[in-house]
Amino acid sequence: MAIHVNAPERKPVVLLTGASTGLGLALAGRLLASSYRVILTARQSSLPRFQIEGITESDRVRIRALDVTQAAQRESVVSEALADWGGVDVLINNAGVAYRAVCEHTTDLDRQEQLNVNYRGPMDLIRLVLPAMRQRRSGRILNVSSVSGMMAMPTMALYSASKFALEGATEALWYEVKPFGIKVTLVQPGFIHSDSFKNTRYTQLSSRAFSDDSNPYQAHYRNMSGFIAKWMQRTRVTPEQVADRIMAALRSDRPPLRLAATYDAHLFAWLRRLMPRSLYHEFLYRRLPGIGEWGKSSTNGSPTKGG
Image (cartoon, rainbow, N blue to C red; front, side, top):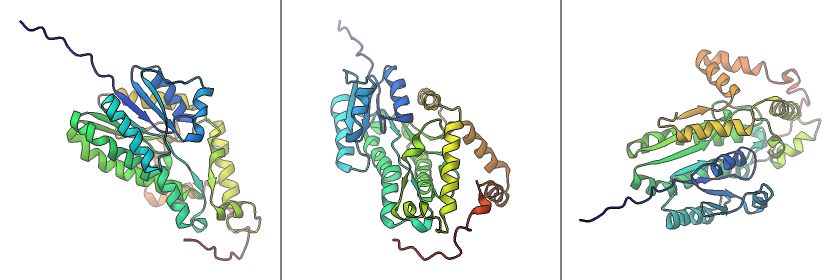
């Protein structure tokens, strides 16, 4: 009589981008404390942060350089996971950047750079991990979006555009892969207590305008940058709390398509549902910081050259 021995259960593999700071680092800590096999990624220049945090490789943890805008690096990380661990079971697209610029102060290159990190890179990682997920008829994809993916703020047009794009594609993806048993979730954090606002990038034109008191948009930048910094420092929501909500969605049998991960995300979601759209926008406009100053820095604004 043949004796059948059950093979050990395969431990799921999680690929996390942008894992070296902020929410990504908080998620990394939760994943390391779990039974998952984990691939933590960050840009090459950010890899030393893992050592500073005491995070090292082991038989279930790998640390890899991944700039999500680089196709060769995307393909290398996913190919290695497939060859050594049978593929990626959970993809968490967390890496992202934010540009602060009014529409008039953006060029085509600025728009491409913003989309490459927040939309094009994540979508290609999804494309690369899906074949193995479909074959197993299981998998999880969690895309970290933002409140800016459900509503736009002045001076953050590029960022909102990238998150709106990610949300639209993810919603379509939810329908496409549900028949294969793959679960898809959009995570929508609002303000998180951190200094990440200091990493917001400016375009060449917006940087120049910010420091020019005569620029017609100077009040826009001054008031909005201060407003965002204030709320990110005042909120009590920590990266660890948001990471806990993401982990709960990861483990859930029926995760939501959209996960409002902070209190303000819940608030804005309800405002959008309850208020007529015209009233909603007027309500928010009147509450913009220092709105009475906007447009008064200069009566004449020369056209800016852009793409």
